[in-house]
Image (cartoon, rainbow, N blue to C red; front, side):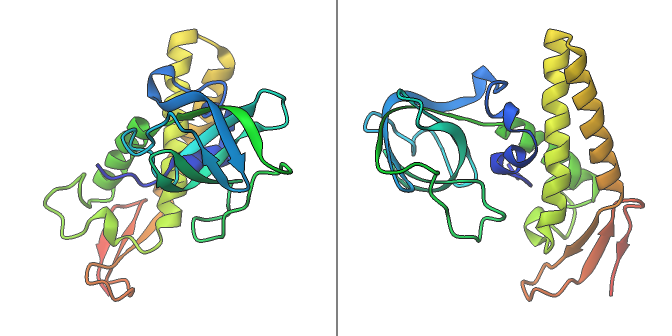
Amino acid sequence: MVRLCKDSDILRYEPALIGELHPTNQVLATGQGGELAGMTFEASAADFVSAEIEPGNVIYLRSADGVLDGIFEIAAVDSATQLCVSVLRGDSESDPTAPPVSGPVTDIFYRVSTLRPQIETVSLRLTEYFGIRPGRTESDYSAEDILNSDVICRVCAYGVIASAYATMESNAGEESFREKQLHYEQLFMKGKEGCRLSLDANGDNVADSIRFGGCGRLIRD
């Protein structure tokens, strides 16, 4: 299933959705006794590979002594028991940066939660809206052909956040969740309609078609 944004993109806007408000049924891995040295996080009892953890997921780390307490981006899955973690980067091409703690930290509680199901749902909606695969199976273009993926990534993140807050509002009935949902739904709709996607099907990094969100038309150069 296509995913037009990652959990790390959600972290950029609403860390609470990965932190205290994370969906309890969407936890990929959790445990105690982890160790952090620089950017290397290790948990001997974990199996990050079987849990399908991947770069772009995020991890909550809290040490027993309180020295470490925060949410970090997973930059790489080095092995079944070892991750490369970083403070949130500007983009996935930037070098990872170690969490701001001095020396090795031990006895760490960890939790990797995800909004992957919501991301996949919103991504499917967006590809259908722009007339590309997988939302439109008959299209000559797919999500992998998008050149300016940062644009659609931001729109997708807005839609995921709106969806997550809508679910929480329906379950808890809190007005603050409703306000958040409406705010991000507006950003999603505005971003979707103002989006301009450049598509390249032959891999030469030159757009051979453009999709405009406001009208959904295909324009060939």
